[in-house]
Image (tube, rainbow, N blue to C red):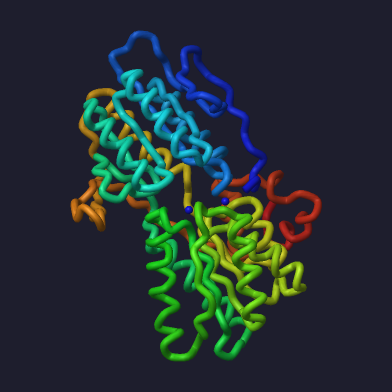
Length: 366
């Protein structure tokens, strides 16, 4: 499951000899390469457009974890380009990585990369998104159905607080090629559909946003609102899409009146919550996710058998169980934005800029 929401971190090459795919400037080596028998780890992150997290949180936490363990890691970002994704993978595989961690751009290209890695005897980890029919050795993510349930319940709570009768709800879903978006929708629809059925809520327009593209999300939502002026709630699948919807609502002087959901606890999403334009977000402690993935990879790189993937997720296409680590997400509203700051995920300096200083003080952020 997110555009210019943090100041993008510029990460230089931390060691010489890093493999960088053509035109990619996000390569990062971490760890020591001093002739130890520990294998190297390759990590391919998806883009910087769908969510700021990939350029800030995940990159930082993964780099720190591998460096602390003395494991060399080549971390690159495919910048949303499927050809680039495969080129980076080919480079990592030919360089002899022992473990490959990927966040797929779609299951087709993800599977092609996992198949190549497997043929080369490389262990594979699906990070954040399950590659359908991909056959990764391990999967590390959050309970994504639970993420959706929190979004659905959050929207219901915000609508109830407004005492609206049969409010029309629009659903702005994530990318149709991302299995996580399917799981989020499964979660929030499990909350919303019974309320559509019993008439508590009215089902409004429902559309997926290709590639989680925030600009497209804004265009889609503007069309939704033009065709249905009665929209009173927006289930937006992440903070980037939520902000796109909020921009449209602002143009129509409806921001703050129409509850909008999100997820990722981005700086922009949290600021929207603080000023009342967004109803809630879902905080996924990305450090825990990065640490869980790196822990698996470090064990494999050091020739040990990982012991932490005690859960299982069934791949809906292959029907095979994938050993998994699934973490617990947290619902964030104005009342507990301070928890995200206290956890160190965002800083007060990032969040509480001049326009939001008073809202931060009112929310108990110190």
